Length: 163
Image 1 (cartoon, rainbow, N blue to C red):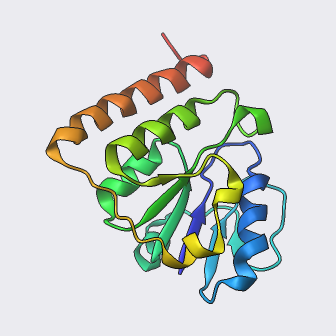
Image 2: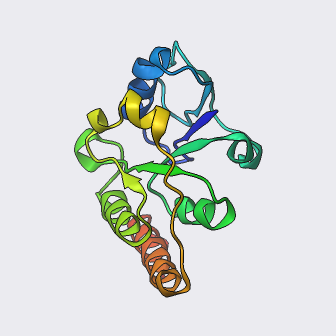
């Protein structure tokens, strides 16, 4: 099973969900999408808005496709599974800035996972064959944790929660 999660950000992530829906008929594997607040209703995949716990989906998944939020780091540390990250981008109105792009580039460089910036890079071949498990070592864990703290501070500042 392939599990796609867009998180709880209130913005739309139509670009990712439409792409998955578009190529799903060519994949001989179940695809489940957590679409969050995205209004687009997929036609070719099973979907839901939110669930109290995504761990059952993570456990069953062969591959996870996730937005590039800090929850991605938590997933990588908890589940040793292949993951592709697709950052929400400001130019598509998916977020207020491009911090997810920066985070995706950073985490890809440090762990080797695929970060998809251009949605057309998310192909049938990649979904069928991708099996890259994030490489998290003692050496890169400290950098990942620092980046995680940076992302949280940035988000709090932008939401006006800084003290």
